Image (cartoon, rainbow, N blue to C red; front, side, top):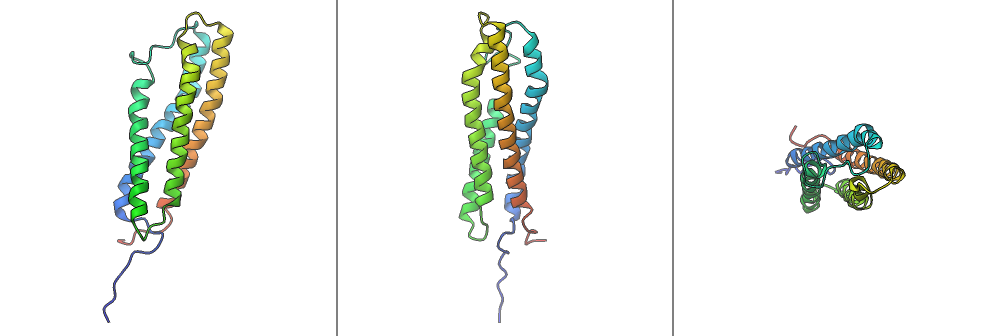
Length: 167
């Protein structure tokens, strides 16, 4: 009798490893960027006069390096969800969970930026307004870091759920 070898249920296929790895690299980029903001940028802004943050599209603006990576992260994460859900041998709830967490964090970033950044750029803002905005940013940033970490853990667990069938 001729046997047909099917991949084990739960085994990450090789075709997903590179894709999931790219998502993990972008999560790490975003997470380390958020950590850098928390440890370096916000304490620096605390000491500067109001209106010191550069404009959205000026050199030194976080928009210039976060938006491209953020868009790429969202696109790659949701493309991975689509690919995995088309595969009958690969359950994808963990990938869906990771993508949803990334999306929630990205939406939170948009809300945070629109609520807080104008205060950082306003030379007429009071120092106490800037300090309150920094505290709000740090709290929101902590939530984003937790969401990014949870997304990475979910994706890493999915990748490590079983050995590749081709090994």
